[in-house]
Length: 124
Image 1 (cartoon, rainbow, N blue to C red):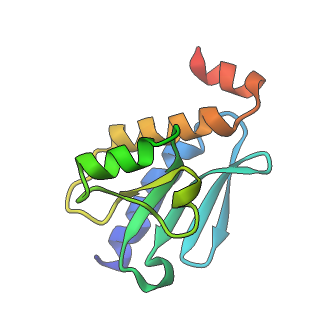
Image 2 (cartoon, rainbow, N blue to C red):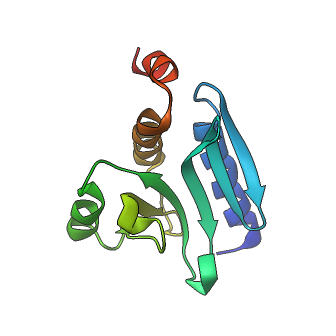
């Protein structure tokens, strides 16, 4: 994947994440974190520890990460370090990306991490 493609993918992901109430972006080299106040609800990972994967990682409901991987291991994976704590990675390095699916995954993660007052704004 070219540098321009990775930049485009991060730009699209940022557009999805930063539409959420009080969401911010923190750049970390080739990666980015999306936060609600001090809690991270999504990570953009670009070749994390040399794995060659470009993805968005989000918090999911208990055991949903292993279920998603079991159903479609070409698209989903258990990310290093955070995967065992209930996070799943959705690959953005495929030729086509379902951005509605990305938005749904990001929104679900946001709802788990956001304070109730902010989460209620999204649920409306």
